[in-house]
Image (cartoon, rainbow, N blue to C red; front, side):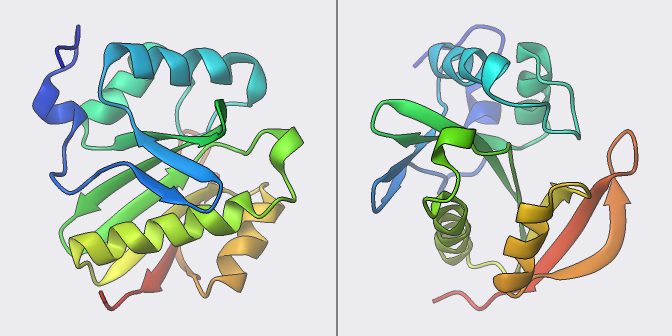
Length: 171
């Protein structure tokens, strides 16, 4: 599928990145300008910024150009959040927007962690790294309950994005 303003090889950076389904959630890899617009437009009123970049279509494209693969996470036809994954050597790097408030408390965050683990298996990585804001207490608790450890590294324009790591043995 041809895209405008995005090189196809950059949009689908890692060959094994693909759509997946976990229970009632669909993880749809954005492969076209239309799917990127859907991600952007849905998020305009649903979320705060991801906090490591300002939520604009150009910044989403910049994330893709730097190797991140964006996924819309859908329950039925509704996008409930957006996540990004990137293979970097022996690591799978992961981050996501907050989940729409109407869908919190339904296990979506745990299914996202399951999705990351499936990607880690697909890519045979040795660790999963996750990035979340220091004020997202739900995500911090989730990372701890899924056996992630803080690396001590922070990033983002306000140095408020915490890096977490989980050792991984691919199945």
